[in-house]
Amino acid sequence: KSLPFSRDTKATVTAAVAAVDSAPVYPEGRSPSFTDSFYQSQSEDADVETQTNQNSSSREFVHGQEVLPEASNVDSYARWNLKGAFKSGFKEQRCTIAIIIVFCILAVGLGVGIPLSSTGGGTDPPTMEDTNVPSLAPTVAPIDLKPCFSADASITPSEQFETIRSSLISQNISDEALFDEPFSPQRKALCWVADADQKSTNEIQWTQRYILAVIFNELETPENKFESSTRLEVSVTECALDGITCAEDDITITQIKFDNEDFEGNLPREIGGLVELRVLDLSFNDDITGTIPNEFGNLVSLTTLNLKNLNLQGSLPSTLGQLTNLEFMILAFNDLVGPIPDEYANLVNLVEFNIGTNRLSGNIGHIVNQWTSLENLFIGVNRFNGTILNDLIPLSSLMMFKGNQNSFSGTLPPELADLNFLSTFDIAFNGMDGTLPTEYGELPLLESFAIFNNDFVSTLPTEYGNLKNLATLLIQKTDITGDITLSH
Image (cartoon, rainbow, N blue to C red; front, side, top):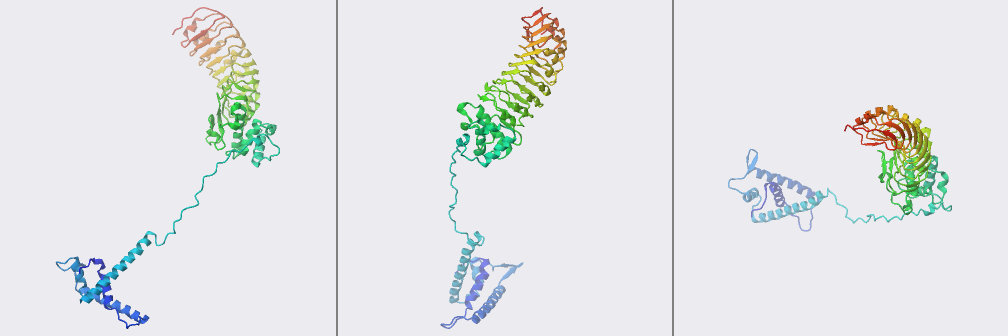
């Protein structure tokens, strides 16, 4: 029969047939010896070579390529290729057996080779289900800080507690005695930072977080005191808190803006420990009481201090005169008393000084005339005296001046006409006298001119009609007479 051989397998089949033809026959009961096997292999090699030569002599080649006889196909090619081996029906039967053996060998080879190739020549260890999958961590119960808050003498403080306590004392952040006072804001803040907080890993962080904890303990309303507050969390950095801004290192606090927070209590001295602070704004918390701490003088990087509309009492600390980087000092609407400390003359970078509506007193002129960068000066509704207006002359950048409701005296100096940026001038309710300088008609930006309730005796200069931006002119309750026609 025709066999489905390809050309690639014909040499293998030929060799197999030759091996069957030349297989030796051993007497019954005798097995081949080593010598028999050796000579058998030599004989097989010779037969294969002979068979190959015979086949080669009967083939045709064109340019080195074997070609089939004319009018042949694959089946006839197979018969032609094997005709020298199949001499009888018996030989054809043995050929069939040999072919079957060859296919078995190929099948076994494929069956073994495919798994080996897919595993890279080895076997994989049996796959076992991973039984080491971590289970969910149990919920950690909040640490009970009340024993620490109570300063219970029977409880030994942690090593972290002692380390942070010593650090805060060495920095003079708090009064040392307050650390041992049960349930004081300082004691509770220290307990929290040392025994509960997860972010207090170095001195900068535990100092900042301690100060914030004191602020919230001291100033938050009773129903929202620190121990129940969510404002500070043990795993959240302080730089992520509302109202807090940090430097580019995302560690150092540079701004605190807790305006209009309904805070109540005394202004904590601990804020003075934030030496890199540039902006402090606690405005519109009218239940914050007490005095301005001397320690605020340590905030040497501060550019803005806004304590407007609190309920602060006492005098202004002279230490604030150390804040030479200060640009905005806003302390209006408090109950501050006493004079402006002479040290404030050092605040030469001031742009705005607003201490209106207090009970401050004394002569302020010799201090103000040092602030040559000043643009806004609000000192109204106090008890100042002296001849303040002459001290405004050096302030070439002055835009707004409100000195109403004080006890200032003297006359209006003509030189104020050189303040080309002046838009608001209010000296109402004082003890001023004299006449109105005609030069004030040259102020290019003047919008509001309030001089009522003074002792001026004058005729209203017609030059004031040249004030193109003038919108408000208040001269009632004076002895000023006359009319003007505004050019606009």
